[in-house]
Length: 330
Image (cartoon, rainbow, N blue to C red):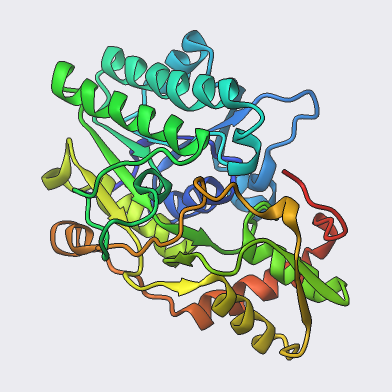
């Protein structure tokens, strides 16, 4: 099974992972409809970073994932729906929890209802490793308990459960993709890797949050290849599939690796209390078990951390004007 000439909808197409997924789907011959959140500036987000030739081949629709009528129109006629639209910033979820429920839970319900009504071939829903909370055991397989340690992760747990219920209740052919910590070009400075890179390129010292959490860092090109592999795999319909490298590094180790690549190992690091999560909300350890993705879907990550960081740093240097390293954005 392939995607050549298949009509594919990507919600959240203007985001970090969404824009890379759109780019990959075009390369695989899909006819892509990109769902971007409406704004009065006609801003397509990170889709604007794609080559002009690629943009000519995308059907962009602008709307709101919370509007069920618009969502139904966006899904209409599509064979596959990759659902990435979500609010993702953990710090912002502490101050706007209701917004996270509306976008992440209600928005997902709208997509499910539309896919059910339209008879969509496959819905691929985006989860997050944050739903696991601090690991009770590692590596984390898909059977690990879900723990809502932030309003963000709780909203994603709710969305995941809606997907599971629609498969079991109505036979909606859905699969849940659960990426671990994805990084790469176009990522917002709300994530720690672009924060470190942009600060290291423009400041005298780094201001960061906790350096102790362990994360399974997956390069975005590997992540989106995983989305497609899982989306096309009939063996995992109705299931959840982890996408991660399968090994973890502390944030501090990752910071030192980045500084080493940049030739700035001696750069001072200070902790900014405003960037530190509440103690019981911080997820301390996330390391994936990607056995299901490898054995059932034929996916495995190809990029080493050095390769991924190299490409990320190169892109960030060229686009440093898009970042404000002098301030912390929740």
